[in-house]
Image (cartoon, rainbow, N blue to C red):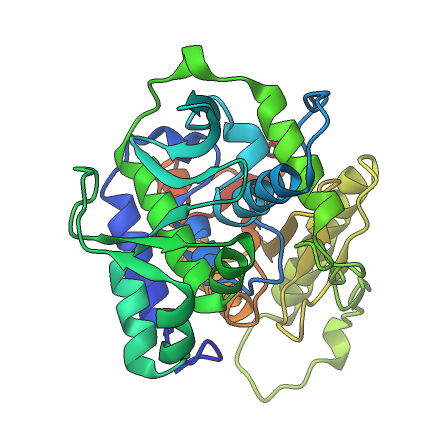
Length: 384
């Protein structure tokens, strides 16, 4: 059992497999099933994936009263914490709508074909959907106050939506404070993230004509101004444990207890260092500082991009070694490191860096596992 107390590493793997059943989803143009599966269970204090990529639009310039500001702030907080890459996918995979109903303003967050959050601007009647399996598992594990839940959250017995029927539950809260109390709990946040990712994986976006990007900007800015503890950390997590140091390998100093070619081993170490230095210098041109190790996990290289997204890289030299064995080893290592970091609440984008061209099938193998294969001389992936 992980530190989540109500979910395990197997749950992460099962979510990844479930999402991968929809290979043609437009969501995979922005992320991967593996990244989303780990994000669902990540520490709720961490920003949502892409959360630092704030919308470029100016917010709607309309003064809001206290209730309306709180409603927009809750909407912005919900988007930032539960919608995958919200600023990048806004208007493409999901949208925030506002409409008048009987003289009242209604805010609606729609992902794919499902409204996952809707509330009136005056703060009355906050409705949201959650993944039923995740919530049931949390109750079974006893990590939620059932009395408080019953008092503050009403579960809808009817489900008028066909999308993911039977896999979700509808919840209603009377106040913004009640909704925030529910959604801020790690298990509920995970249930909201899981359902939202499923919605984007299984359904398309068909409401472009209704999309107004300035609405997201208003909700975003309201959330920043309203909450005492926004999802962004005041002190960001470090991008690596320590600076990178080149290894010093003297073939003559290697012991004879192992039967191997000492000079070939030293050449492989030199090539490993050259590749590492190439990536470090290339990233330095973008302003990124690269080191080694992350949260105690022995990754070869680790860094963050300008938006705060965390990357790790496993470096594998192919000098004097069987490329297939090296690639298998490198892929296994970077997948292990990603998993261990996810259990620590660190969502990372993994890269496998090699020193020579390889069979193209390895790019597909890595891509299927949410890993980018980078060969010496390749341009850096978008976003690094």
